[in-house]
Length: 189
Image 1 (spheres, rainbow, N blue to C red):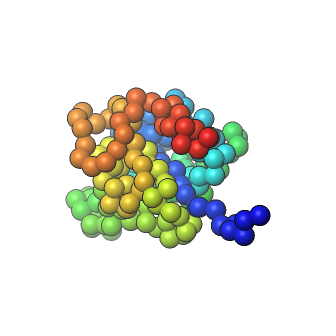
Image 2: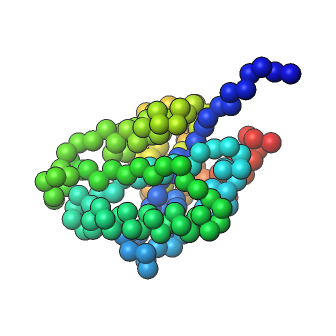
Image 3: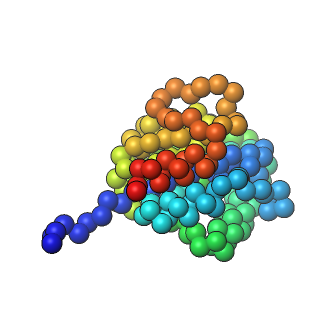
């Protein structure tokens, strides 16, 4: 019998817009939210495989004055409830409302959290004592790949649909969230 009982703590990091919900310019209203095909199945599989589920999302619409942080929290509470109905629980949701060119002065600054900065991922790693090299990031923009690579996330995926061209950095380009789910199942038999 092994005396080693510590399990590796790892996470599936997910961007929000374009990964959890269909990309929509500055989504903040529940009635406009549409979930991406396969997102519930991907999250349920990752959770069953022992991955923590963490959302890391830039929310420039707050700094631009398009919507408020309260609007963001109302939408996220609704999204989390929709996942909970399907047995999926997010361990953490981090957002960055800051932008160096934000219209609202209180949000106008550079931030280590704003992707491609790795701040939100590193916060999750510290909070949950994660092994980032065993973790996964799914994004739809080059900034997601940049953040994952800068933080040392073991595998990053770029989902088809938002970026016009290739990104720099290390990642696997996928057509759908089902491709990510299949990869997780293959890596964790």
